[in-house]
Length: 160
Image (cartoon, rainbow, N blue to C red; front, side):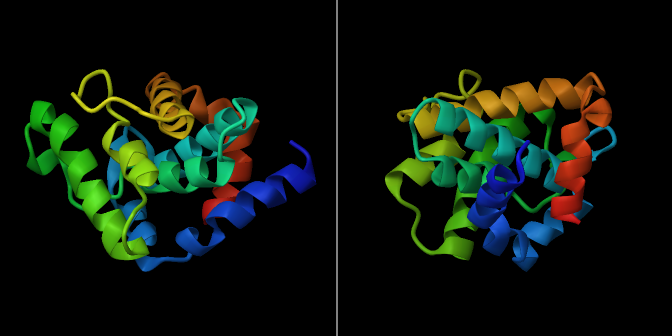
């Protein structure tokens, strides 16, 4: 990745990465060996790349990707089937509390990221980017591919 491109991405999410609410994601386990913070940063970057490739708003996708799992509770406190449906609503509520009112597009990015498991469907290219990025990143994390990616080292330098 080129430095100018990396800087452009970092500029989209720098203020959010500095927020204490986002930093709390470091304490929440997402997938084995991956914190919710690392997962959200990974999703954010991949969504940013996809959105730009599709001619959509990369900054919006990057920010929504970072906030898509801002549920701020231990996911093991709910049955797994319920967590799938409850966490997007909690994340949208927490994102609105952090950012102020979300635009309809931002809200849809967060609420629809579990589609097709959830009933909320992505209604924009940005929401589709966050949804697809979440799936791609989750597979990479569960299969431990994430640990071997050079991107992981770059992401960890950004989020630490």
